[in-house]
Image (tube, rainbow over all chains, first blue to last red; front, side, top):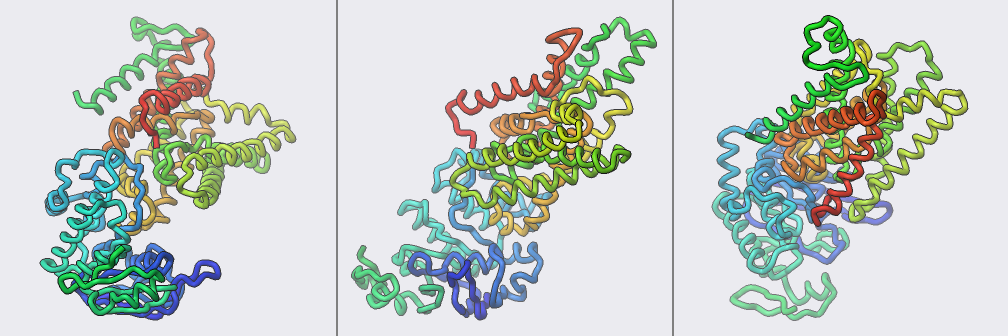
Length: 250
Length: 316
């Protein structure tokens, strides 16, 4: 369970997050949506100790962010940051292999190697395994980084706009894999999405942020409504129910 | 034959060859005489070791600096670390003229560390979408520190010292005068133990933190390696530019960025480049010689231009 209590974050005088409290039980896909600048990435980064806590408290199971050991947290929670620009000439296999680093600290064992091969296979990366990251397309590189966080084998997986570089087929494939991880392995996946239709199709629960505050929280059918599009996203896109789920007509 | 083995063979050939190059003629047939052995023991062998150690250590230092900066165009000798070491040495010579060489060396390395911390404090604030700003700022920053050193040296009449530190050359290398470089080589070799951590640094702060790395601590230990290597090289043989820039770039193209695989190649290539340049420096105006820094400056610039334009590929 991830618990966030009274979380606030400022950059200069700008309030990025304003007294956010929420609790995320284990299991399922949770989508964070909201307009640009709502504080979604900041919330995710704070949960994963990529930014220092200013005010409030976050716990992941029995680990308190900011107090707990970095290595313990790395075995419990993984984050895929937004736009990882890698000019690196690491091979895909090496990159995915680093997902096991929190466990082996530089001395990979048989289990580590096996998990890496599994991850490569699961994300269709075996044909690219010996290619350098600098030779891949944006989407392929994104997949390699997702595979790395997968191999990290954590209960909690935080993904910041993972669909950014992906085409429709790749986006659906990635969401389907995440769905599978949540359903079959009981993983908890928190994902920042821009496309509300993806949230509506794949998430169990949707959290809506606006201006650093949590404005809605619940299953997609209950949260995503014409009123939400109008008040939160401030646009008048129409919404239809298709096969029982809300779809935004863009 | 595998790449590392081939590299090692080439390095050994250069090493042995370098023993027979110098102002005093020496051919393998002379090896039976006592004078020849004395020459090798006191001068030629120390020089060969000094060249190999500084070349390997500087190449590794450059590699680490590029990973920390996440920029392939920086190296310690041009980005303020080398100049800070010189400034530190100058201040020690001014304020504590009687200090032992060990103290001088430690203070030069400390000055180099402060200089590198300053460099990273400045370049952290640069926009990441402008990668060329980092080396440019480094050159300006190094230039400012270097000029400060020149100004102070001019005021107190120590310019000739500064000149020795600024232009790396091995002509004065003798038994008893180069041994500090073993420390530089040892420190550089130690970085192999944490090669994975340095490779991860190259993926950026967010990925490093995600993998449970103590980011600040790893960056700091990298800076210590860079500073010790740079400080000791400047103290013993003087600044040698371009090795830390060209070698890691070449090796990365051939062997990728996983340091566990590429670091030994980087070390060998750095040693081979400086060794070949030093042999050339001894031959070109035989029986005199030119500073190795001058030769490397030319070879390095040519190699770098070739890397930039020669293959129609991005360097970054």
